[in-house]
Amino acid sequence: MSESTYRLTIGGESVEGGAGTYEIINPATEEVAGLAPEASVEQANAAVEAAAEAFDAWSRTSPEERSALLDRAADLIDAHREEIIPILQAETGATMRVAKTMQFPQATARLRRYARGALESTLIPLEPAVSATTPLAPGGLISAVANRAAVGVVTCITSYNFPMTNMAGKIGPALAMGNTVVVKPAPQDPLGVIRMVELMNEAGFPPGVINVVTGLDTAPSEAVVAHPLTDMVSFTGSTGVGQRIGAVCGAQMKRQLMELGGKGACIVFEDADLKAAIGGISSVWAFHSGQICTSPTRVIVHRSVYDHLVGGLTQAIGHLKVGDPLERDTVVGPVISGAHRDRIEGYISTGVSEGATVAAGGTRPDMERGFYVAPTLLVDCTNQMTPVREELFGPVVVVVPFDDEDEAIAIANDSDYGLYSYVFSKDASRAWNVARRLRSGNVGINTMQRNNEAPFGGFKQSGVGRDGGRFGMHAYSELQSIVWPG
Image (cartoon, one colour):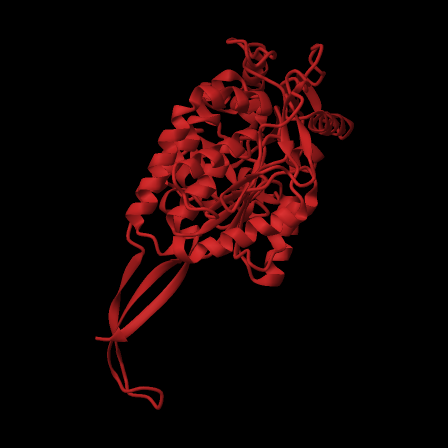
């Protein structure tokens, strides 16, 4: 492409990037998938200021109006499905199956969920209290409600793995609560998000309610976080970046929602359905090349079934075709970039040097081009090894044995992360009790499925706060107490 058709949206105006454009690379072909606008710091500041200017009027719109606009936006985005899916596929490198089932439809599903959420009452009734007379005020029956009020300007920053879906999960509840937003997608794949915001504004959102800035340079990102008119930052991404954002938010007392890294512990007991466990663990390789924070990448298995599980996982890898994500039978596509591929391969090499054994994979696939990593299984691991402790965000599974329940829990909890863990056991009582002892924000028992209404977030360095369902609405609100004489 010789020139960009993608533009920033600031205060309802479509504008070119003040610092030019930059190339978006297709991870499967290493060809240019499009040119994204490079925002200047001045444009980043202008986006925050436009959102702040729009906030008062938008926060006073009726829930019905906000709901109708979110539904209308979802309808309009759905109408452009055939245009947007190829864009998402090309910029993320996702297999066509993932693009069609996750990258696109989940975004509009989230907008519709929060269209309904906008109609939920923001009031929480409280019991009246009998108060004695004090020097401050006469006594009496004092009534009260807690009201969930809009926070203000929310800067939304997302990771590259599911750009539209993740961003819709932030924009939807933020707008439903009456906030205005500045959208900053990941630099690797912002094109689908840019198009989504354009269509949302076309659906009728007032100027300044939804703004989008993009770029490779970190300065505009830092500007939208640090701007004094930014009231809240909602971030999905790595723990390291989250810590830097959190430091800025802490210094200025900004509200924050942080969904950060994960190193999912998957405990497999001796009585587990090993077929189900192997199928679930294989999702690390088979679902978006392991680029998902909820993956069960750290398998903690009872020694009595260790060999059986490792054998099953090794066999499963043999059925996973690595290749062109546009081909129907491809299961494992590329990772997002050459730099990320090198990083993952470095972790595999480090693990081997620390004593791990490559049971399957471990070598770069024989592809002429594209950023491919072979599905890899590391065994003979201990919980002290680098690839066991750190988030790889790629198609790599590590296996650690245990001898009893307490040891399994200790290994699982011996981690800086605590986002999503799993327990496989036919003993429902044991699985439940183990789940409650895990220092993890989410635990799946005998399943990799999620309930999207459940609160989602992490313990420890996996984040701060919760989103999902009505908890997502709560995350983008401030609690306000209102009292009066009964």
